[in-house]
Each structure stands twice: as structure tokens, then as C-alpha cells.
Image 1 (cartoon, rainbow, N blue to C red):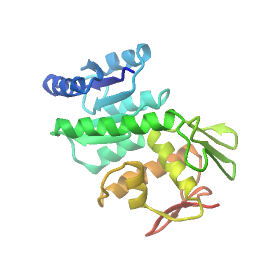
Image 2: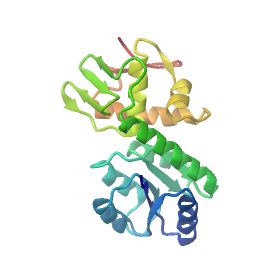
Image 3: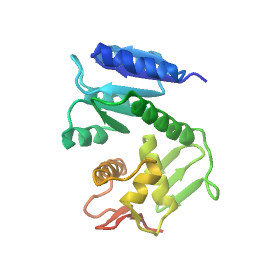
Length: 232
């Protein structure tokens, strides 16, 4: 099956380099230097993953990410030359699944692309959990086979990362899950101190979609200094 990767970067040498490495992995690549051209492509082609540069001449990567998340759930990786924490948090809040700071090693980017595609494919292919494929908790219903989630019969549009977080918390309902355990399970990477911010942003985004109070949450509860849990 052909996997279509969208690259949006106005630095031609970087875009060409990414394209070469992805094509070597047999990915089909759509490459653009304009944000608007990329958005037009998304409307015409089936895109499986997008790599977006934050700094573009017409529409920045944050705006493109926001526009994509209005209709699509495929993974988004942001490229940024900035190392400020706020840029990373902004991207994750808008629905990005990962970010990588320039300059980067092409093989690292390829590895992250593969990791995101594995996660996206797994949760959209309907692979059931060993013991259960549907969990219901106080009006929240999450189904791993159909990759659907509803809250009080209202459909929640979740990214693969958000779905993975919610599924893992629901699977461990009644137990406190540490940020480290959650990060290693969902992202499949080594946990660092900065990883806690990544987890916090996604938890906040989930609560917003669930219209849950951050001060007095009904579903995803914070156990300060320990982690998160969903009650049974």
C-alpha cells in the first residue's frame, strides 16, 4: 500500500534532503514550499502524514496544522529552527503529534515518521486489545476496533496520540499512571524531564475536547507529583 507523505518547507535543500531519505524508504512524497499549495494538495490527495516547517512565507506551520486538524487526523510532525519551549507547546496544543528542531539528522526524522505511521496504522486498523476492544467509563466510550470515541453520545475527534493516551488511561482505570509510564507507552521513546511538558499539553488538549474542567476534572484527574488517572 502506498504511503503518502506531505513535506512543506521553503528551504529547498532541506525539503530535497527529506524527500530523498523518505523515497529511499519507498514513501510517496508530495513536496511544497507554499502553505496554500500544501492545503490544496490535502484536499485532492490522501495524505498519511505531514511534515510542516513552522516558518513559511505565506501561511505558517501552526496555521496549517490548525487547518488540517479541522478535518483530518493523520499524524503531523513540525519542523522548527526555534528551540523555545513555547513553540513546541503551541504546536502540540494545535494538534501536532511530534516536533523536531533544525538542524536535525535525516535518519532521526525518518525514524519518527515510521513511529508515527505505526501508531496511526495500528489504531486505525482496528487491532483489538488482548482482553477488550471497547471501554465505557461514565458516559465515555472508546472503541479500539473502530478507533471511535464518544462522550455522552457526542463524537470526539482525536488524533492518534490523543486516542493512545485516552485508551491507555482507560485501560488502567482506577490506577495512577505516571507521566513517565504514559510517555514511554504512547510515544515509545526514552523519557526526559522535558517530556513531561509534552504529556501535559496533550492531556490539556484532551480535556478541552472532552469539555472537562482542568480545575475539577471529571474524567482525567491529575494526582500531583505522581501522574494521571481515570476512575473506575
